[in-house]
Length: 248
Ligand code: SF4
Ligand code: FES
Image (cartoon, rainbow, N blue to C red):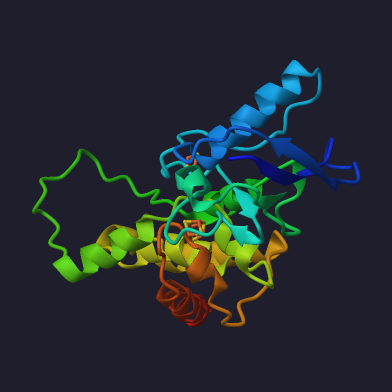
């Protein structure tokens, strides 16, 4: 396939960015989207031009590093898939593909297609952990957790912190991410000792980072590669309300 790529180029955080057109030739339908960008970068470097900077690590849908807006969709057109899981068989010869970074005030562009998602780390650091001393690992059946609860907690814990929910939301809200992180602890006995403190601290950090509010657009759930459900946002709201009352 021969394609035209329109890629956001921006030298650094303070530079003015712009979309630039690049032709790429002989792209195999079996290539992943990131392999196709590797081919482009090899061509650019061979010509003495700067390679396009983009985030990636595992390339298996696990780490949450890849983060492209592809033709206006966070992680591209495939459902329940990250950018690194997208393959070129989704496109046809002659297509033009527009590739931009995830856009949100709280995710400033670092260079080209890379954004700083440190805001998510700071939200996690505010309360997304259990600091109680649990001693040695207990036997598996010491703390009984029903199957349904374990499944819900595991579903919430599947969040890989990629930020697609923020990029897809017209308000750049981080409620789906924070909802997943609060839920995975709120559902389990291990999360109870710091339950209120966690909900208040993570919510406060989310607001301090400049993310917008949820207005039930459902775009986050549609874009999420791990199919995190918006019921986690409802749980976050309940946890926050409960914590506000209990902690007063
Ligand atoms: S909720 Fe989904 S889209 Fe948002 S950070 Fe987690 S995995 Fe990514
Ligand atoms: S590179 Fe790790 S999830 Fe895409």
